[in-house]
Image 1: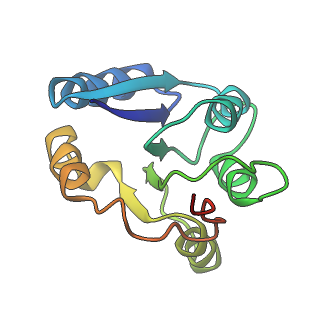
Image 2: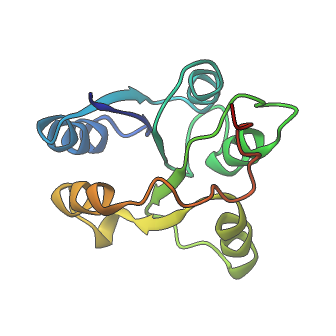
Length: 137
């Protein structure tokens, strides 16, 4: 079974480049280039991982991250979030990202292949920062 990955990224070239490598590694990738639409997809569909850019049209990535981690706004969202951006955020924003996301990666520092290698090693059993865990059945 393929790992379902939502990639919220507004740069088509970057999105397609990363998606091609991830799909070749047996990931099912959905690309959304708009912040509002990306948030809606993350809230409505089940994804195993979300890759999130911070600079997006119509809704910044930090607002998406906050909404996904708010149990009132996103009660059914439990996926890990990996920030993948070219922004170098100030320390206060980085502290908030560290509380709400699993990882902060800089696009300039990681190739698509390295990202796939990272995702393959990524331990999904790590508790999701800032999110309610699903109830045990």
